[in-house]
Length: 503
Image 1 (cartoon, helix red, strand yellow):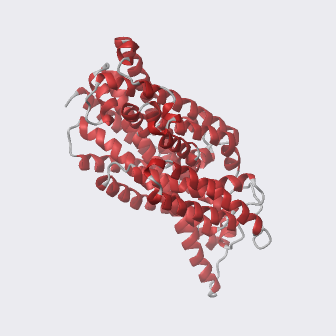
Image 2 (cartoon, rainbow, N blue to C red; image 1 turned 180 degrees about the vertical axis):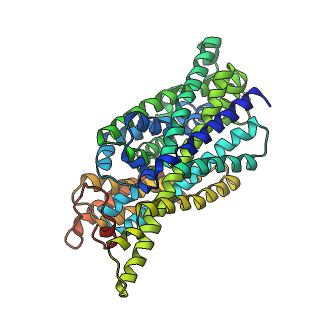
Image 3 (cartoon, rainbow, N blue to C red; image 1 turned 90 degrees about the vertical axis):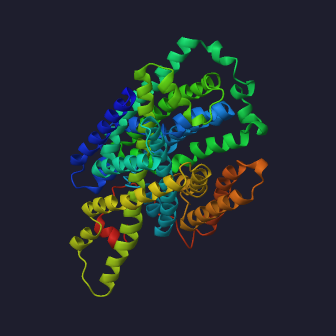
């Protein structure tokens, strides 16, 4: 086995052991498992947001996109995610952290109603399950190349490793593994870039770069992909505001101020690392003019063109980037399935039904139905079908591509407007929110199949605008029949109150 292979095995084992070791921090609590007891300091939350942002798309996909289509075709990933964290810090982190939520769909339940919660839960769970599959596939692909093993075998091994350490410590495991992954990875990416720059000089690379690859035509010329690039930037920059993994970390911050500063920190780190990966994509035009698969730009640089330590950190960083996004996705989706679908909308109605049939349900019984301990058990169990579905999808469609884009576009189209108006507009009500979710999501699906090819990209941008144009008048027309709920900023409602329908 090569030195690179041995180094990556050590890295993966460290990742695994550290994640499992966080089991003891959960202490049998669902709240500690999902949001680390809302106790995390700035450096942990900021690092976690940074690690979650720098996934396989923002690094390996970034370099591949720049190589194939110019600067904005690749840098859009990191740029869009950095904008998202900036927007979250400016407008969402403080009010949402102050509400003491466990999951993002909790907001839709408390601000609107259970049906809105169910709709957004299903949309978010499906989109993030696809994201988990894509990051499983990215990490497994690198492992299969380095160790010359079958892709499916690499996929199963990686998925099992991530699954076990994620359900062991929940968000604590995510925090610990993110810390040991993100900073060595950033050193590797930055180190590779400056090593190549010092070794060759920029003039060696600049001659092979077409003018339209580095100017603003990627944002101004439809022929150079401006519509698609803007669609990607807006979908990530605004659509990812409703990302389950980002919001988990925002909810886990010990104070609203900590949540806000952490978002700004993650945005800055994402831009810096994204620029470096984009430049290495441009360097690839000279280093690998005939490369068959542009995704191999960073892995090939790491294995053949830079000192061993930088290459190891880059390959480990790519694997870790996929793992950090996958573990956040597993935790987010399983928590939503467990809390917002199974626990609140199946177990609680069953308990109410028993009460209506004459059975007595006191406060102790209520606490058992949706106790913190039961939430932990359910969330861990729900991770099993999430991982199984992600493995299946990663096998049949290892490059989710347009499927992933569509899934997140649907969430962007249907869920961002109700969240934003729910925070900032006192007249936002349940009919308006439902109309925005349903119309925005369905319209995005319709446009996917019917928009002319030359206008591709507009389908991403039109649907959220229509969602806004629907929610406002519907909310205004239904104020008397459906008065808006008071936007209560409080601790998580008491279990017995939730069971009785009072919260």
